[in-house]
Image: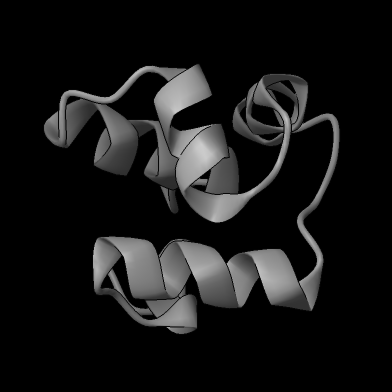
Length: 68
């Protein structure tokens, strides 16, 4: 089964040992937004996807589950 964006984001965050608040500060969003993304209740903007891809040094395709 293909992993969701939220599952992938949470896994990347946990691998780096980051809390939601730390990641939120790093990419200039709120902690609540990280939680909403990880729980599949919201989708990120393109600007946020780019920031996440840059931060984790992965492609956007990887983040959205297209390159696993």
